[in-house]
Length: 145
Image (cartoon, rainbow, N blue to C red; front, side):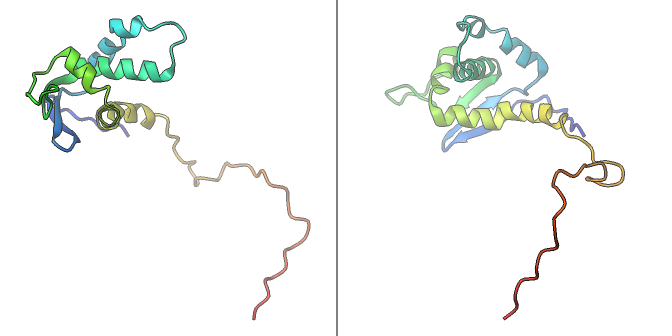
């Protein structure tokens, strides 16, 4: 079953202690736009999956992040959201991983839900075929002390 979230209001994501992002809902339009990002198109042919994942996460974040709390420059001054700041923030491994699992993965869960097979009408293994050969002889009972 597909569960629709009809909320169009931005939501806060807590990514680390003291760090949270205000993000817009993850929509098809946002993902399509991110896929067409110039940083992704400029990746060299044969780029690694890791490079593609990082470029895609940054493209999604640049479109989705509206505000943040707990982000400052190297001297501790609070900074405003900017494309450069978002890219730098996602270069921090725990932040990247948290963003991927709490925001991007929610969109991918829907994609995974469509791959689920329904059980057979008469039970989950009614149509299954056996793969093990029959036993040659019955096994002996375990000794009782």
